Amino acid sequence: GQNIDQPTEMTATEGAIVQINCTYQTSGFNGLFWYQQHAGEAPTFLSYNVLDGLEEKGRFSSFLSRSKGYSYLLLKELQMKDSASYLCAAPQNKLIFGTGTLLAVQP
Amino acid sequence: NAGVTQTPKFRVLKTGQSMTLLCAQDMNHEYMYWYRQDPGMGLRLIHYSVGEGTTAKGEVPDGYNVSRLKKQNFLLGLESAAPSQTSVYFCASNRAAQETQYFGPGTRLLVL
Image (tube, rainbow over all chains, first blue to last red; front, side, top):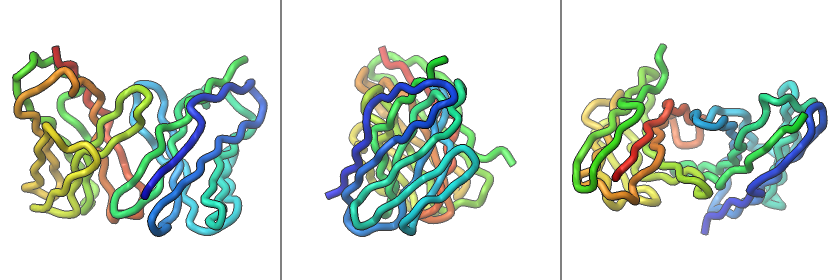
């Protein structure tokens, strides 16, 4: 079967660090995507991990452990504009999305 | 490069009416997708296409039909709209199944 789980909501403070977790169960593994979606807008690509470990891109980093079926997105130096939904997705012959984590950044 | 565009941006339908949503991409992508997004449900795949002239069912295909007559266009049809089809519809495309998907701006559909 195919299943992706992430927390529904998270709250963090401006300037802080937040970690958004994603666990997945898929038949075969072809990497893991993270997308960001602001309210009323389309999802936009953040990262793609296919190998174990941490990949850093500025304030955002994404980690993958294939043996544990686990990934996380790490957001540093949070800004108000980071308030959005963060979607974890696993490609099979099509992309399977989690329901997304709604992050609220408070002043 | 416009990327992925969707027409219309917003539409109100009465139950039983029909309509077609148009998705166009100018990136020469082989794969195109139609999703619907509802509160608390995430993105759910309706239909997808792996190339011109091909279509396949996704997770929630009932009540929808699609066509991919030209590589750059992917049409989503509702033959007889129902209130349960009130949603935000996103189109996306990519070069291959395991590559980044690029999304259109979405179509907000309200069925009364």
